[in-house]
Amino acid sequence: MLQLNGAYPLDYQGQSANELCSFRDIYDLQVKGQACALCTTPFGDSPLVIPCPHASSSSTYCPARFCNRLCLARSAKVHPLLCTGQNPACAPLIKFTRDHTWMALNALSHCVSRVLLANQIDESTLKADWDVMRSLAALGMEERHKACVVVFDLCPYPA
Image 1 (cartoon, helix red, strand yellow):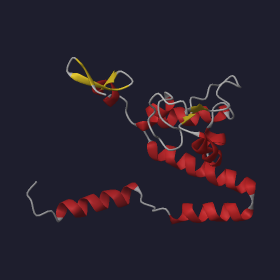
Image 2 (tube, rainbow, N blue to C red; image 1 turned 180 degrees about the vertical axis):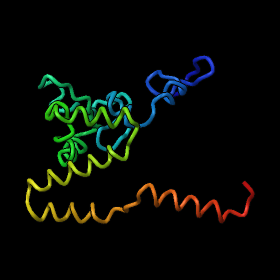
Image 3 (tube, helix red, strand yellow; image 1 turned 180 degrees about the horizontal axis):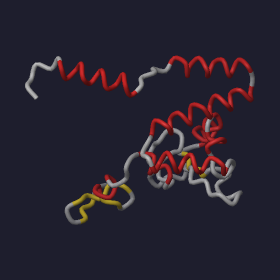
Image 4 (cartoon, rainbow, N blue to C red; image 1 turned 45 degrees about the vertical axis):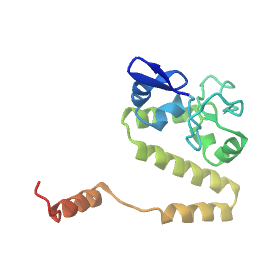
């Protein structure tokens, strides 16, 4: 239910739309424990929300929360290497990714984590995950720039 708070409606746990827009992206919601660490679903007041099992078991806090047991179980393919509770050494990488607003690096770290963990299971799991990673599109900044130049040069409208 939307309530009015001045000019902005309250739409998420009492926060105004303006406050929500101040989050840079879904990553910030995940770090604050307000979105699922696996599927990125924003949380409401749900009894199904599960914190990372290693959230308080070490000196380094893991903010990851999952929207249900299925997401928690599926996160075992990626989360152990990117969990600051299990692997405090990943904290500088996570901080670097966020400080530089470089979400492609965040996605790459998830992919690498998945391949490394698949390698620990067996050869067929590694091959299946590696085939998926190899099938992803490879597009560098130079190719993106060239595509933009081509699109804008062929645009029939004046600049």
